Every structure is written in structure tokens, then in C-alpha cells.
Length: 266
Image 1 (tube, rainbow, N blue to C red):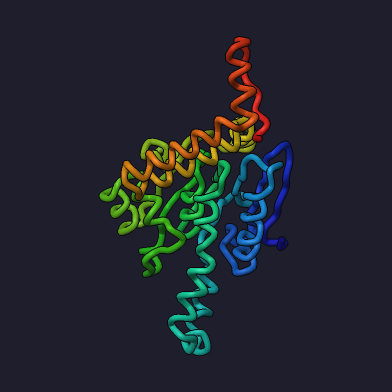
Image 2: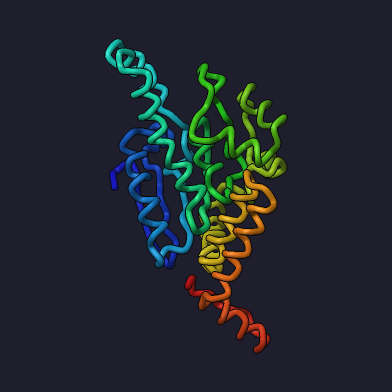
């Protein structure tokens, strides 16, 4: 872990905070390395039942550090082989896949601007809660770039191809309420209540049957790209596996006893 990425675990909730508030939490290599280390570890930790990604201060993440982009334009950086630069970026972009495929719920808490790769990271999470005055934008067209970290993939599935093209081409800024109406975020609240509402949302997710949710994610992710036959095959395997979980057995007993189930994540 690094000073630029903070981690807290409490009651089954692991919170990762991008911590460069003076730069609106713009991404750095150190921050990305921290995420690449933390996400697989949290995925494997049975005590963690939901992973929250947020930003310090009044921003979620401004995306790439444009000041560093200028430095990258130096002669030394330009001399690096094209393939080497592609490999380096692709390696850092694994963070989006790790969030998307995490076998437990992931929640982005967006207190303020989420731009460029920062928005892509938020979209890689399963769910998003935003302050009503948070500004969301693809931003790439404003700096002459095409986009990274899977934003084009996630946004296309969330809002459809035509709207995704509009938002990418124009870089138009969305406030929280419009993002909610488009289905980009799941919940919106006033800024003053965001922390409380986000904590409540995370607790709801942590109380779910974690193993079953992990298999639900596999099914839903497969539905994005697989055939119906592929999805049915996966659903059958995952359904039988979840029949064997303690959470299912306890929930079935609770149903018979006409009481609400309590899930342990096992």
C-alpha cells in the first residue's frame, strides 16, 4: 500500500481511497500499483464482503495527471518503444478488469469530479452512488485522447452505443441527477449526506450472500458477451454450487421459520 492509496476494513467492508486530494486524486503509477496489489488480495479474503472505491476530499478521480502527460512528451519518453508503452498502459488497465470480475460487490462512491480514466474506474465497479453535484465526464476528447481503462466498454453497456458515442465525442459533463436518469449511477444524494448514505449502501451489500453474488456476477458478465447456451451452462453450474453454501441452507431454514435470513458470506 502507498500513501496515495489508503485502505480501511470494517465489518466486511474494504474501502480503498484514492488519496491525492490536492490533484483531485489524479492517477499515478504508484496508485495503480497499489490497486493492482490490493484488489486480488481483497477478492481472496473471505472476511471482505464488499469493496468500496472512493476519492479523498471533494473529488472521486480526475483521471490521468495531465501535468504528467506533458512530461511524457519529453524526448526520453518518446524514445521508448511503442510496444513498451502499450504494454505498460495495458498492465495498469488490469485494475478495471479486477474490479469488474471481483467475486463480490464493488461500489464506487463519487463525492465530486470523476473524469477520464477516473470515470472508467467508477464504471468498472458494479454500482455507483454520487453526490448530486458530482460532475461526471469522459473528458478524453478535451485533451485529444481516445480513452482507456475500459470506459468505452462499460459505458456502451450502461447507456447504449449512441449515447456512449455522444458522451465520448463531446466530453459533456453530467451532474449526479442526469447520471442517475441515464443509469450511469445507481443512487444520488445531497453532498452532505453522501458519506452516511454510502456507508448504508455498502452495509446493504455486505449483508448479501457473498458467494451467491459472486456467481451472479459471473452469470451477468457472461451475458454481456456469451450466447444463451453459454449463459445457461454457467447458470446451471453456479446454481448447484450455491445450493451447497451455508447461506442458502440457512436462508431455506429461515424461510420455513418465516423469519428474515442472515447471511455469513459462506
